[in-house]
Amino acid sequence: MIKAWIDVRQKVNSSIDNFFWGISSKAIEFFSTAGAVIIFFWQSIKLAFKRPFRFEEIVKHLEFIGNKSILIICLTGSFTGMAMAYQIYLGFKLVNAVNLVGPTV
Image (cartoon, rainbow, N blue to C red):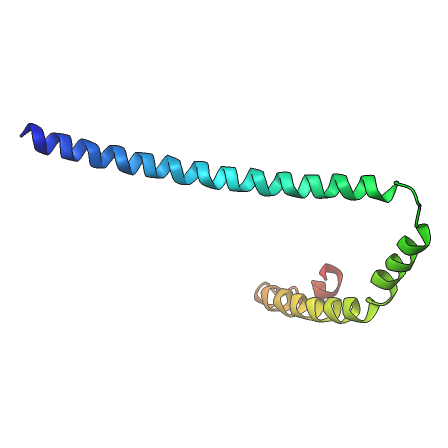
């Protein structure tokens, strides 16, 4: 009788331990990843203001990322807008408010 009670108690304790071990491992993983991102950001900021200054390179890369991506941005925005307009139309059709699809989108 006592041996059965001890076995049940050990199973309960091990399941509780596994639960808290899983939570703590996820928390440690989250904080280590967040810390790595913060360290990367801080090093990027430090290197941006370190000599020799390369503002021409920064401007060149900003132009490449911004202006050369306009086609992709427009395509993505167009298809996202069309999908959103269609979904809103279906919802507004149920309440007879189809004329509000344009202002909502």
